[in-house]
Length: 428
Image 1 (cartoon, rainbow, N blue to C red):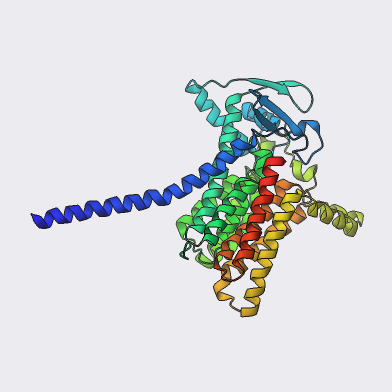
Image 2: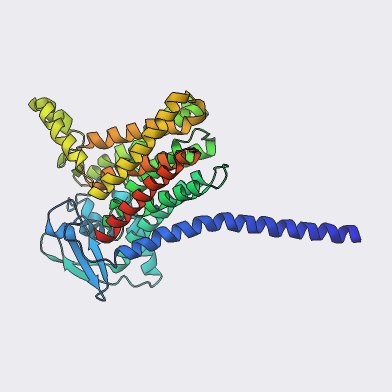
């Protein structure tokens, strides 16, 4: 009897300990996610910024003010997302420039209809569209778009934390500072500042560097279950935001390393839904137009320049636009992170200790791929180049934990990045 009493007592203590350990580990994620979401609320309490958008169009810098407290920025493309989610036939009638990313609006349309069947009111708000014509928009659809933005941001924070929390190094003040800085930069950046509270797909530009950071880890081994999850994810999200295709070359390498060439080359089947969508739309009576390519000449500007024999001049102009695409405070962050990374790289070069710094090397390769893709894009704005700085920062902050010398200088540089970001978030 005494034996069984002791046994049960030990079991209960073990369960209690494991439960506490589980809840504690999960709570770390919750606290950081809440911090990331809370800071978005702070952003709409700030004064209006008449030049929040990279476009000079007045409507792209439009705000809706509620209760004389909340200043919500509405981007010039938001009317299309809202109207399309209220009436998807606009995609067939060539009334929208969003034919290249239909699934985002289809998803909101489907969820809104289910909620309306459950007697959730759609609400209504009227404001002038880009054409100056007043339109009625459903508040329910707007809320669903913001919910999706919140889900994407939550996923980004969780992915970054999942990498940092696997570290078995001692929890030094430098490591804790690095984790905090990484989450602040993922939460407070030019992309979220402009687009979190507006219906749009640009928050994916926060998720992309988070996913690339995850894929750049040297110990990453993908099993078949994870492969199929990635396969479905890419197939679906390419119909939400085509820029996610940048994940494919990196994912190809990691799958090749883990599962072999058959599964690696099978990844390109994820392009099928994206490739057949224009044909489906045309078959249904629409006229598919890839707005970013046809009107903004994304990537194809290179072919245009070759054809017009102006490639050198055009490349020089694009290069200048690319360099000037970030706000000054984020230029400072990029510079500080680059200098920290350069210092770490020089140390690795001198010691020749490549094997123990594979994460840094993998991360550097992934960063180059991402930067090249964004550089050749041809359209430059904080929403694109901000992701490059985010990926650079994540790679550097993850590696800086190993530093054993010049720790004070590293802390000063990281605090400098935090300060520059704070200035941007509060004053921009």
